[in-house]
Length: 515
Image 1 (cartoon, helix red, strand yellow):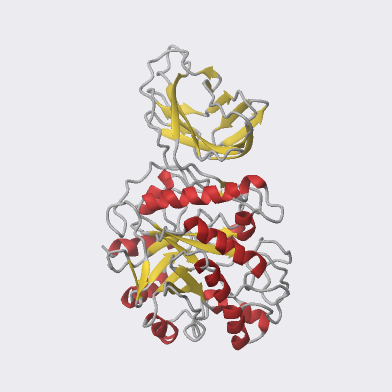
Image 2: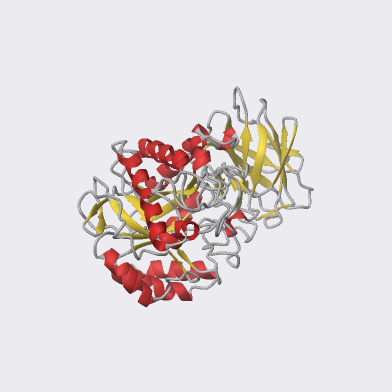
């Protein structure tokens, strides 16, 4: 989707992947007449990339009284420096760190838990804190007998737009019991697994990694830990599409090193591994790229990867896909979406010149940089020996597939599929257009609807589109698993525990109906 809604002021974060909890217990002091207030504290560090890490702290009320207006305090022994925090108000003075309750979680009820997280930078040794305070009282002092420490698995992160609720119980995904994601390849006009069984992708997009890094706010937007993935799989999905940023992956054009190059790649690899462990295939999408473009429908005037361009730049996109393919070669549960939403025809001035630019790249009218066409990006992937399925979206922000078969890139492995995006405000948004444009494509190659949605917080458009796609055997992923306002763009959830928006409720119900 175009980037207007995704720049909302939401704290972008690098979530945890494999947390090693260090459980501590605490007892808060009470008056003689008050019920005993006690707490357990679990500190977990995950995805330590050498110069930074994510800390997750879970506070559990183990007493009989609620913990109200809580403030948590602790200190590091090293040079750990706070970068950003979420699900609480984080601050640091010297080595001392303080977290105060957010407005939506001022009280932790007896027996309940709350998790707050933050990113830190550091050098040298990353020693975990050994002492915590709650409302100024040292953990482990005062009256009461603390209960056993809480589980090291943090609860689902809360969103500022909704009160936190307990993590949902995972339902089986569309591929069955969660487990290793199936490797995919193309057979005729279907995606199939290693045994030749047809796989139809039903999933969600997880936006954030395309913009947070260049906005210097982190790598992801919202949590990317096990709790958040469990919430996803409870919707019975079997795939997640993750948009990426060219500059952040390559570590170019001055992106903060904490969020670029090896750090960015390591974070993406860890998230892909987590998704696959939960039985989810992953689509990696080149979303934001370099190149100065100020023509028709320009999203920004800068040369760097801070918005959607009409086509990717050859100088960056080719090395990007070479590197991505080398990284995930041999893991065919990962699909490569070559470029998010092409719109070269708006720059070149016609459909014919637009499709030529789309396929062949090079010098394209109206675009002031050398373009990477779909063929050159496919060549970059295959030059590494990778046989991963690749997706190629059409013109008009991937909504126009009218000439896709005529301009289909030549792929030596045959593992190429058509990518289509569909929103209620697109030109091709009727069943008559779908039959005219998509049916011929579907007869020849698999079709993956990489994005779909509507911008009215409802699901009337989906109620027509999804049955059509089901009847045609097409795959689809809905935009987007982020807690943005669904009034400013399609957002499936209001909380990362999986609470749906009105739009999301329609999608969730449809997935449940598939059995």
